[in-house]
Length: 51
Image (tube, rainbow, N blue to C red; front, side, top):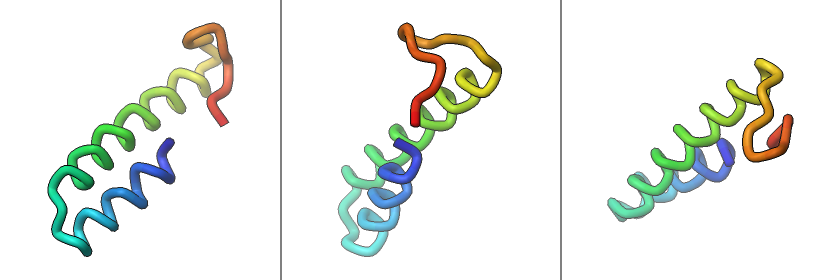
C-alpha cells in the first residue's frame, strides 16, 4: 500500500492530476499506520502483518 501510494504521488505530480496526488497521500498515510501497528505486534483487522 505504501508503494502504491508513492507511485500515485509521482504519477499525480508528473501528469498534474490532483486526484491522483490526493489518493496517493491517503494510501501512503494508511500504509504507514498499518505498518506501524503491525510492527508493534498489534493485530489489525485480524491480521498481524500487511505485506
